[in-house]
Amino acid sequence: MGRLFSGSRTLFAGALILCASAVLAYQPVWHAGFIWDDDRYVTNNPLLSAPDGLWRIWFSLDAPSQYFPLSYTVLRIGHFLWDLNPAGFHWLNIVLHICNALLVWCLLAQLRVPGSWLAAAIFALHPVQVESVAWISELKNLLMGFFFFLTLLIWIEFLDSAGRRRMIVYAMALLCFGLALAAKSTACTLPAALLLILWWKQKPIGAKAIFETVPFFVLALGAGLIAIWWEKYHQGTRVLVSLSPVERILIASRAIWFYLGKLFWPSNLTFIYPRWRIAASDPTAYCWLVAIGAVVAILYFGRHVFGRGVATACLFFVLTLSPLLGFIMLYTFRYTFVADHYQYLACIGPIALVAAGLAKLSDRIGSARWIAWSGGCVILACLSILTFRQGATYRDIETLWRTTIAKDPGSWIAYNNLGVVELEKGEIDDAIEKYRRSLQLHPDYPEALYNLGSAVLQKGDVDQAITLCEAALKLQPTDADAHVVLGNALMHKQNVEGAIAHYREALRLRPNDSNAHHNLAMALRQQGKEEEAASELEKAGEKN
Image 1 (cartoon, rainbow, N blue to C red):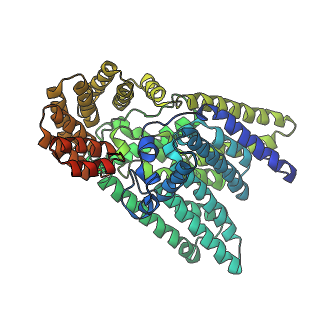
Image 2: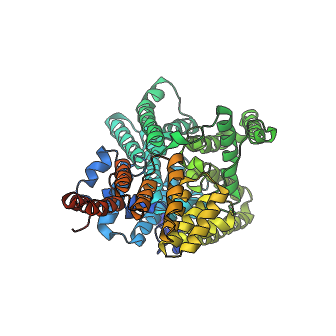
Image 3: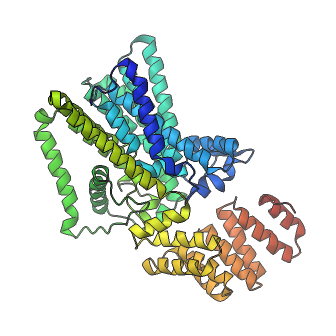
């Protein structure tokens, strides 16, 4: 398998087979819809259509999520080209993922890793990648991956260059790394990969090599600090329950084995995995850490047997995952510690190891090489089927949440989000049932509280709606949606002043909330403030 597509005449055929296989495997995603926070990134994101949107994307704090200016710029271009047709965004993700697979092929071939084509094909077809490809918001992951791989390829070229060309190639690598960070800040692990490449190629890692990587480390540190600050003060991680250093280490050790398990046995993949309960006082919680220690010991004492390949693959896997293992608090940790898209880059390490093993086996068994070839084909066929099936769960938002609940009946966030879908369809009683179920599983969930408040308000129970929204705001005072719903309830009680106060607070927290602008305008009209109401309607994007 290692020599497959090694000749110049077959390179195009190899690329064509890889591309066609990925396109067919992702057929269920071709015409899928928007899901979950795609509204924040695309459908309800004013930065994609506002005249000054491009400026604000790069030079303001208006981004609805992290500071991902390149990703928002690409989404803005997509919005200009095909408006809000989700098919265009899905095809963009599919094409980017295929480009990344081709870059993986080139990267491993440049590093002379056996089975590079097979590794790229597994990367392209593995079902753990579906979340990154089928979820429009994860364009940032794919775009970051594209420039991450491109930087590594240019770095390899830099190591083999000389003279003036060497400096030009170095500047190109630095530029691509900057673009990777602008797409998603988790690219900050790339400098470690640069050192790994030096070690793999048996280049000396002396003062000169360290000096050449310093600018990459400086950029990575800057992007990482911005991401931590943004998560804490704009995403709300400061309100999460803090984890002790020991608990974070235990989470990280378990997460490493979780991701490896999903790579080698990709069953029960789901959009949101159950959140583990980690207790430092529980002796069994340390088994994952002990297992990692055992692997490290085996690799160290067996380094003359294994060579550098196994260690390089393991180090790349762990180092690339490190920002997402629990050492840094992420907003998603409120409901899960792991997600498939977190290992989009890291999975290359174990995948390359498996592909290289099959390639070497193929070379060793000589005349019976067809056995290794068959094994590789079976792996790719199974992965393609699993990816096709997994892609179907992303067909639309309702399918996604129902599938998530089927796989994890304790997913309180899935019940709440399914309730939102049902409420939008006018199925109020079903939505109320889902919100109540969510609160049974997680009583202190503010979103479910004010969503239930909104639903019972539509049923005419104003007092209960007010009680629920006040409880939500007690838990999360900075939630703009809770303020809007409470304002709506107060309007039903003819408490216009109170409603206006909450609408204004919602707009202070989220200035571009068109719904809050509209509702504030209606309240102001009841007070006879027509001019101010007209101004709010204009901000809401409506005609007077």
